[in-house]
Length: 129
Image (tube, rainbow, N blue to C red; front, side):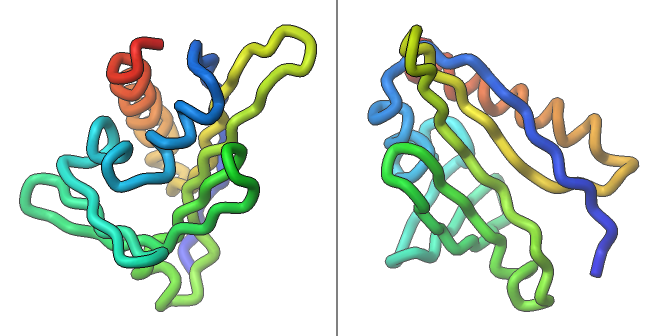
């Protein structure tokens, strides 16, 4: 098993949780900001970037709260790596935060965090948040 470090990043998002959830869990929503194109057949999502394609299995834990994707290539190798989106709504202020969880090699940790910052900036731009 590869030695990867789990990390989480929290982003404030000015959008409703249900609106945000669509962009995190549907092929149309993910195609808007995460990949060039996304298709799905059931719980298997295919992500397209330029000349590459990757497949992941989607798991939704709590509707409008948490979506997890596990790359199929990692699943075949019994790796326990995934990326996850978790939506948190503050009960007092109704402020919405998006927590991204992912794994990266130690020497790629900062690059991975910068990747997610860029991607979430794209998401915020798309949804006007």
